[in-house]
Image (cartoon, rainbow, N blue to C red; front, side, top):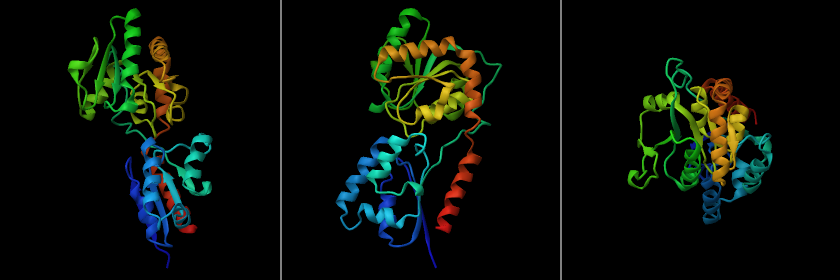
Length: 280
């Protein structure tokens, strides 16, 4: 009788493929965020540290790998192929499954007026790119002095923030939804994302979004956001300004785009991967 091993792992979850390989010739499905930037390097290090459990063992014993936050191997072919090649996987056994939004919670409120502040919901991790955002915000304030920049997420040092920038720290979901509904725009200058849930949540609330064009963000946001080069503060400022000017249009596009991302679809795709593994 064939046994199936189902393992789930997140940002630092490099152990699951190794455990699966050590289990020997059993059928298996690994559900993994395999494209967020630390994962590949950590997995390679663990494989090198475990010579008895090599890349070939993982490729042989796993029936399917579901990239839950992952890039679509077809739509983001070059980047996805790099990940697949590095782990020695069969592309036919790799399936991208997107995250989704709780549309009952993240929704617009026509009775709430938007206020003159930009929102960036992110902790101050290096890849979140706050320094360049602050440069861009200074440029924006020369022509839009009324703007404020509101940060959420724990770890920000309020005493060291530039003029016009404030931090609310960690906020409950209800307050985050309120911020999405009231912000003039969400700006998301991340240097890399495995999915990009905050800007999708913003779209679901009808909030205009200016976003980095890095990682999976273009795939997730499509033409419902203004995309920019996150390494260029002037480009960030220009994209935010455009998003503010196109607020009504982008709000409508965002609602349409976000509607395609549901937890029902995410669950159905998981079921399909399990069914494929059973028939393998």
